[in-house]
Length: 176
Ligand code: FES
Ligand code: FES
Image 1 (cartoon, helix red, strand yellow):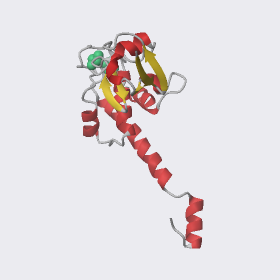
Image 2 (cartoon, rainbow, N blue to C red):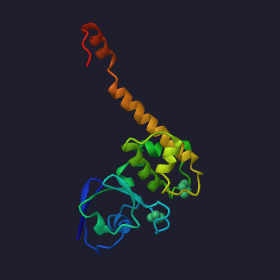
Image 3 (tube, protein in one colour):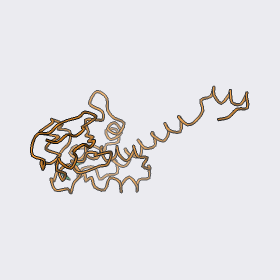
Image 4 (cartoon, helix red, strand yellow):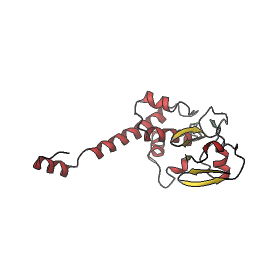
């Protein structure tokens, strides 16, 4: 029996401890958003996050994630409400056949969340383990860069004092 947290929910897998994580997610838990491509650790299609880090779930026996936190594409947006990355990929033309997309989104999600930069070269390096045979990568890189810039803009806005606060600070001479 293997206990793990998937998308914030504690799940128990009662099968063989060496069952591949991708099979546990897809067949055991019905989370079919995670895709299998090569099945050999080469393509990245099966990428999920384990404790926030991208891993290829076709290479990981479920016993290795006992007690750990797994995030799959289902933890992000759905058709009714897309995650910013999904929206950007769609609008920039970064998703075509879509086989690579869930894994690509999870790797990019980890990148955005841990403060990765919007430099195209850095994004290409971060996504190097995720292969795409359709897009030529440029549209994917553009989409990720756009989401990173949006993140940075939001963080900048959050740090900047509101107009009312700065007016009060000017009047009172008190700055925090
Ligand atoms: S299916 Fe896991 S790396 Fe290709
Ligand atoms: S969109 Fe087809 S493999 Fe990436």
